[in-house]
Image (tube, rainbow, N blue to C red; front, side, top):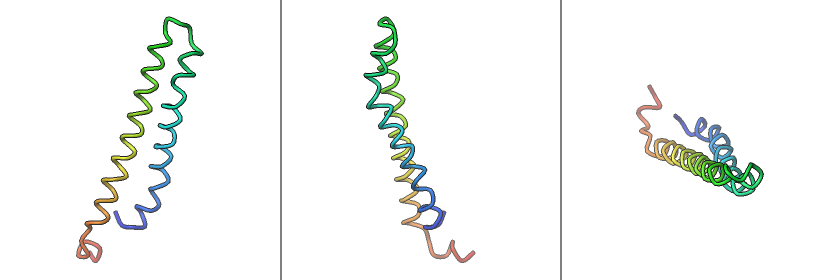
Length: 78
């Protein structure tokens, strides 16, 4: 993966991050919208899904950034 491909891929990773933040932030309000016996279950699971999306997006962005930064010049010429 070269720098250009990494730069093209950054908006996709940021989209995952933003969606995760929206899900995490709205989990409490969504839990209030469902029946009371499922409220805690839905709230906890939505927070978990949001945290997983945020973590995966950040991890993928960090790994791809590291790979681009440490890419050898010899690999580009082949």
